[in-house]
Length: 467
Image 1 (tube, rainbow, N blue to C red):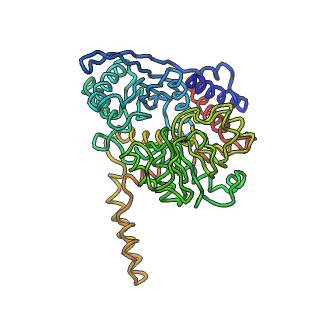
Image 2 (cartoon, helix red, strand yellow):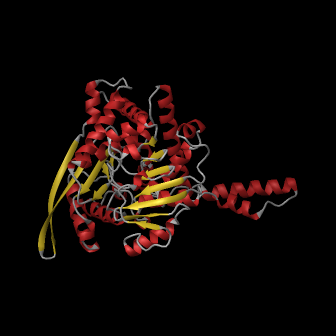
Image 3 (tube, helix red, strand yellow):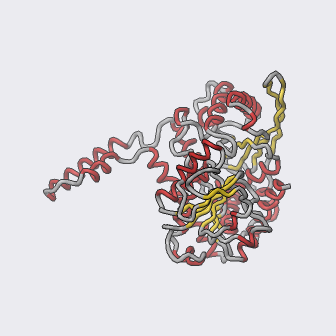
């Protein structure tokens, strides 16, 4: 039922934004429904027994190709969830203007039930089934990590693709989120969390926006509560704490939470959680075994970074955060969204807030196709130019430039610097354009404005191919 609500919420948000567009009903239907969804059942012999697994790959839109979207491993995965996530990927890619359609995949499995070697065997079999249907292909459909998957699974999938298509020179581009030593891009693991940080920063660059939300000043010292300390939640918390001097006052996981009004040390609580599987006994804060009501605790910014539908019509009335940033996909139901909007709680929606992952996936895909790292051709030329400029300045002034500045100039930008720069630019621009659309079209909230921006761009793309 939860997954049906997720798909239903996504479609209701779509319909809500349609009233602000000139899109015809027939084109709207074409954009809204998934192009295709494949259900795959396959067997793997493990522990002297054949186990049958069920997986899905949904292609929501091919107005651009390849279609892009992660593969999750989750025992509660379903076709409805996959189709909702594929739709969000379509809108997300349109908002940040990367030339992808939307896709998503899932395998119904609890990864914790299996060893790493068994997960590899299962992943390779799943990949074979997807590859032979062209549901993994550098020019047609490009997965990435998601809930329950990581760089390891992407490396195994890429290896299976190369085995099946050994002469494809772009084989590494069939997936993103790979290990760096296997064609992955430095910065991809942090990308979604980093993107959350960048879009929060952009929100606080607009005085009208943060004053309207009830804030009196900028981002520094804001109290942040985060649900989920996985890859996205961890990196968002880490960067906001270390670089923006925010206070992470609460981190929630499925088996308990940790609280500290003075701020938690994210690195220390993450290490404790990895070692013990729980926050219980962690000296950094107070352990709370029941997390059901902590989404409603006092804080400035709430970042749901776990699963969908965690804020519903029952707890939305009690939310005390001034700003909610959806690091997860679909954490707020349609009914809860309406309640929060009436209460004037500002929401930065998932199709903007967590788009950092697909942005840097795009960079990785480009890098794999180009077969050369970013900045490789320019770095030494730029260093020579800066050395010449520094020498000229020192000659003219008769003074030496301080060594720390000289080193920074001459060293230049590394690949990670370029990746972060590109990501920052895409997140800023996405927020600015959605904000502008909201103001110009008198749209009441950022989410509806974001959907309008996405739908208009997709409609134009379909129009250019004759639909």
